[in-house]
Length: 217
Image (cartoon, rainbow, N blue to C red):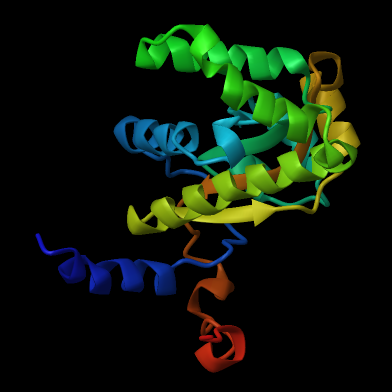
């Protein structure tokens, strides 16, 4: 198929998606579709390919109830088919860079020593360089790349999503035991199917005109 032939279908999906406020608690995403969406998280691009994150797919009803208590009472936490917590690796350690080097060597079948120039460049930036002062902010921006990719692909598959920043990160970290693992939650996403009663599904999508947000130079 010519790529341009897919544009109308994708455009329709992007117009169709919205931040779902009410999910149908009786409908679950089928395993094959969810497996693909999980894989999309794994395949998310990141700066240097460092992947400074971990994605928690939370299905335990008791934990999700605690999420709701610490997430402004939002029903998405308990009613959506799936809930993801996007967490970052805090204060990115040298061990993470070393693990990445080992993974490259394993996947590409090259000596880990041959990766020394790349590793030194990474270390001079995020480990010892100016970016170190904002390394957690940098990692959070990487996590949002994963969130955006996930939501876009979910829409193409007819899966509703809702990105959620309205929660107490410290409480979520405690619930999941993240601090002791060198992790911290930054954003969540609920995924599933919209409830027929969600009035927001019928609202017209509001965006600034293209000329207000896109400038060709």
